[in-house]
Amino acid sequence: MASLQVSKEHKLKGEVEQECCTGDGTVDHHGRPAIREQTGKWVAGIVILLNQGLATLAFFGVGVNLVLFLTRVLQQDNADAANSVSKWTGTVYIFSLVGAFLSDSYWGRYKTCAIFQVIFVIGLVLLSVATQLFLLKPRGCGDETTQCRTQSSWEISLFYVSIYMIALGNGGYQPNIATFGADQFDEEDTHEGHSKVAFFSYFYLAMNLGSLFSNTILGYFEDEGIWVLGFWASTGSAFAALILFLGGTKRYRHFKPMGNPLSRFFQVIVAATKNWRVKMPAGEVNLYEEDGNEKPNVGARKMLHTDGFKFLDRAAFINSPVFEYNPWRLCPISQVEEVKCILRLLPIWLCTIIYSVVFTQMASLFVEQGDAMKTTISNFRIPPASMSSFDILSVAVFIFLYRRVINPLVSRIRKNKGKALSELQRMGIGLVIAIMAMLVAGIVECYRLKYAQKDCRHCQGSSSLSIFWQVPQYALIGASEVFMYVGQLEFFNAQAPDGLKSFGSALCMTSISLGNYVSSLLVSIVMKFSTVDNMPGWIPGNLNRGHLDRFYFLLAGLTTINLVLYIACAKWYKSMKLGKDNEQVEYGV
Image 1 (tube, rainbow, N blue to C red):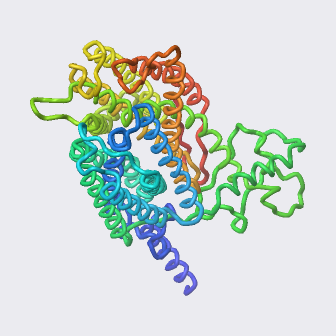
Image 2: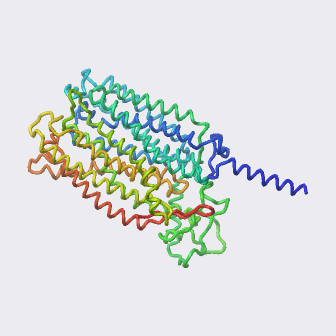
Image 3: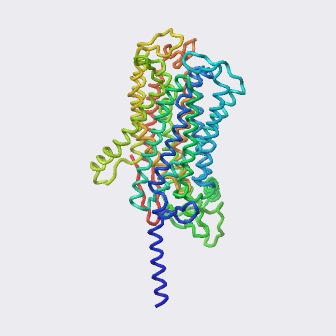
C-alpha cells in the first residue's frame, strides 16, 4: 500500500510539473525548466517587440539616408553611392550568419543578442563622433547647397569602420531576436502556438514602425544637413533598446545551444561518402536510430525518415549486426534528415534573392529618383528618403488586412482543407506584387523624364512631376513584404531543424544580403554596357540624361522569370516529418 501511495504521489507530481512547465523544453535564466505562467508569452514578447522597434529606428536612422550622406558629404556619384549602400546593407545580412552560428552552436540566443547589441551601440557612437568632429567640415555642410571639403583617407577609414561595426552589430543581432521572440511561445500549447504565428507578423510590424520615425523625423533632419542630430538620436535609441532587452532577462525562456551544426552536417556527408558502395535495400530497413547516450541534439525533436536524397541514407545504414558507434561512419537518421532539410530549403531560399534585389531599390534608386522629382509643397521640402513611410504604412495596413480579412476569408473558402494560405503560397503572391511594383516604378520614371530638365547642373527637383507619384510603387513594395518576408520568416523558422532555428531566420536575412550584392552587380553591368560610344548610361549622375525606367523594367522581367522557377521549387518541396506527438505540416503552392 505504501509503495502504491508513493507511486500515485510521484505520478501526480509529474502531472503537476507537466502542467506548470513548458512542453517544448525551454529553460529559464537559471537553466531550470521554464514555468509557463512565470516566463515567456506576451510579457516577454512585447519587451522583444519594443526592443526590435527601437533597434530598427537606430539602424534606419543611419541606413535610410546613407546614400545621400555618401553623395553630399563624401561626394560620391549616384552609381557609386548606390553600390556602396548595397554592399553595406548586404554585409549587414551576411553578418547574420555569424550571429546565427554562434547562437545555435555555443552562446544561445540571449547572450548573442546582448553582445551584438553592445557592438551596435559602439559603432553608432563612433559614427556620431566621427561625423561631428571630422566629416562635416566646414560646419553646416552636407545639405543641398553647402559642399563639404574633401576628407582625408584616415577620416574616410574611420567612417567605414564605424558603419561596418554597425553592420556587424545589427547583423548578428537581427536573426536571433526574431527567433528568440518566437521562443517565448510554447508551440506544444495550442493557444501559445497561435500566438507564436502571430508574433512574426507583429515582429515585422514593429520593425517597420521603428523605421517610420527614422524615415520621417530623422530623415527630415538629415536631409536638411543636420546629420549629427540624426546619428546621435539613433545612438540613443539603440542604447535604450539594449537597456530594455537586459531588463527583461528574468522573464525570458531559453533553448540551450545544441553544438556546432557544421560538424553534424559534414559527418553525414563523410559517412555517406564512405558507404557509397554499400547496396541499400528498399524501404527504411537497417537505418540507425540514436539512443539517449548517443543523441547528437539533446532537446531536439525526433525527425523521421523521408524520401529523397537517397544517397545520404547511406550515412545511417547499418550493414553489420555488430558495430561500434562512430559519428564519422554512422549517423542517426535524425541527423541525416537535418541535412536533407537544409538541402530542401536551399532552392526556395535562392528564389527569394531576386525579390530582395527589388526590395533594396527603396534605399537607393527610389531615393535618387525621388530626389530628381518635385519635392516641395509651398515652402516645405519633402525628403526623398521619407517616402519610404508609405512602404511602412502599407506594411501596417496589409498585416491588418491579411490577419483580419484575407486569412479568415481564405479559410472560409477552403473549409474542406481547414487552412488558409501556406507560407509558400504567400511568398509567391509577394513575388507577383513585386513585379507590379517594378512596372509601376518604370512607368513613373517615364513620366518623370517627360517633364524633366535635361541640362540641369544640380538635378534635385529638376522634374515638375510630383514626388507623390512614387506612392504606388512604395505601397506595392510594402504589400509584397507582408506576403514575402513575413511568410519567409515563418517558413524558415518552422522548417529549420531544432538545432538551427537561428540559421533559419538568418537565411531570410541572407537572401536580402545577396539581393543587395546582386543589385550592385546589376547596376555595374548595366552601366558598363549602357555607356558604350560615350552614352550617359541608364543610371548616370544626371538621371535626366539616363533611362532608369529601363532598369526597373529589367528587374520586372527578371522577377517574372524567378517567379516561374519559384513555383517549380515550391511544388517540389517536401516538409520535414517529426516523430512522437509532432504532426507533419504540409507546405505547397
